[in-house]
Length: 343
Image 1: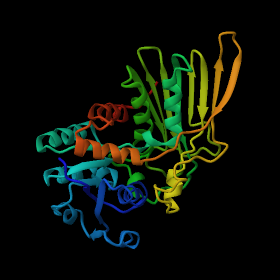
Image 2 (image 1 turned 135 degrees about the vertical axis):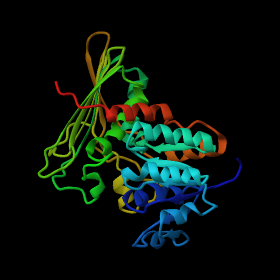
Image 3 (image 1 turned 90 degrees about the vertical axis):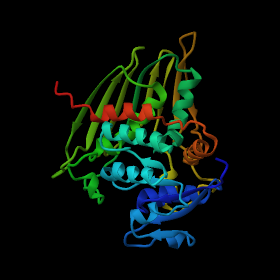
Image 4 (image 1 turned 45 degrees about the vertical axis):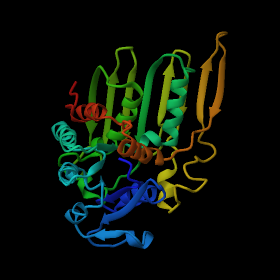
């Protein structure tokens, strides 16, 4: 297990491959980005001249030097391609959602154990600047016991996505399976598995076949209630995070800048990478022992998805457990699959 670096292939060079994977592999000496799959346009080689651009998934999977395969193809193909990669003797890092059903997810983790390969899920938003600050505030104890936690992902996108796999009514499509894994993973990473839950989904865009609004309400044994919500028709977003505790409250906008910077071809190694704009500070309100209110603004921590790739490396080379566990992914899938509450 001392071989270095980890030779990696990416199954697609669409948005996620171009923004969330290739730049971090290229700039991290712990990895060697060897190949991608590009069926038509050969864009990857323009930015990465030494890369191999395969025409098909099977060609990349047959590359014996590749140890780690990033499965970032359309949602409904994750299970099929991850299974193929495992059977070819590769470790896999799978984009969210890991698969379309709990049964498929369970089978992938069991197959990984059987083949002696690691199955890891790409939940990069644990390394968002805004969430990292929220996590630090909660863990500091300054809010006391947490009573309510609200997390939401608001957008205004009236038109259908050009990625039609997200818009066609099929397994793992719709907003619930697109943004739900991000929000639920953040909640689970903070609080664990809920004791009770309900799910609400609805559709509002004209001619849409899939849900474009969802809410999860999660209840914990200690009295904590969590609200996780996303909506594609929000013209004026609310704070992405609102936390209420016995000693105070905290709220924070969704302001992580990594995606925008990566889209503008900034490298993750740039000094300005992951630093939020001024004016996006979180608002902390604490009530002291004299029942006086104290308000302060907290700057976000630097966001950097490099932390996820370092965790992948630590798992593969040093056998350090990957922080996004199989158990957590199974909890997430159970919530995503839950039937809608009908009152």
